[in-house]
Length: 290
Image 1: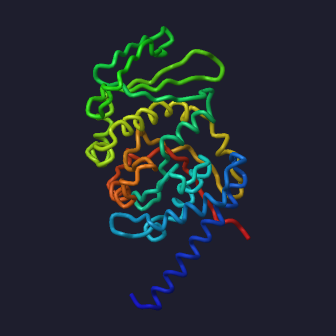
Image 2: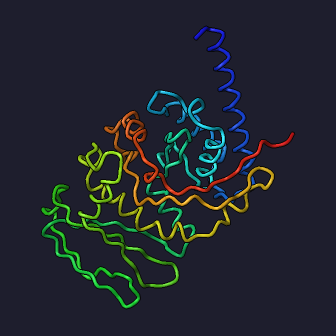
Image 3: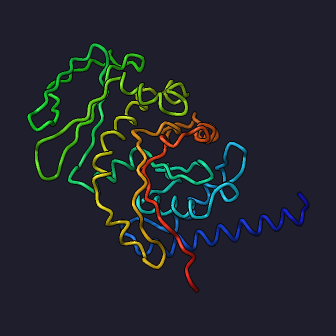
């Protein structure tokens, strides 16, 4: 590639970046966002992060992805009130499109925001723990006993995990319970088949991630589209959601674990199948009329 052509390409990419950034800034003005959420910092953070995102052929986002998919991923991030610099979400390239992937703690925030749930508390059950629960006629599960000695804690001896869900309008609780067999079965559907560095070194965190994503899924998906409907009508029109089944995201590590490199995340992400992508709204974007 000649120097002139490289310069032309660089200018085009810069122009595309600015157009998409301006679009997200303007379109998000009609969306419901937390008052403490900074739209401009989040959009700028997104494009900083995108500079290091490539597909399996080494192509960058602006070269490999459609502009509409970048806008859609950006709007999904804004509607979730997430910021990639804070480790709340990340982006991958799949099938020529940019996909927004939220971390599990964002699922907790969304479930609390969009339902009557007020807390999700995950707990690991190890071999030799004393653990009992009952199922009420309503179908709700209630943990009645869990006694754990500190000597039982061993990531190679995880038996199960449960998430206690508390609600605003009642003292009753519910619980999502998963056995280790169920967790491993879920991981088999992922890119690394549960054999990645994260699953091996941080098995307890991998279990919690899978559990939380499963526990919050019902509450997040049962919410209405009020956040989407209130988009600026001149900027985007809402279609039916693209339903993609997913119970977990296993392509990245907790943001506080520096031993899992971002490059490894992208390498794993490039192997994803459609089943690994979270549910995202499908939007048609039109270039704003000047």
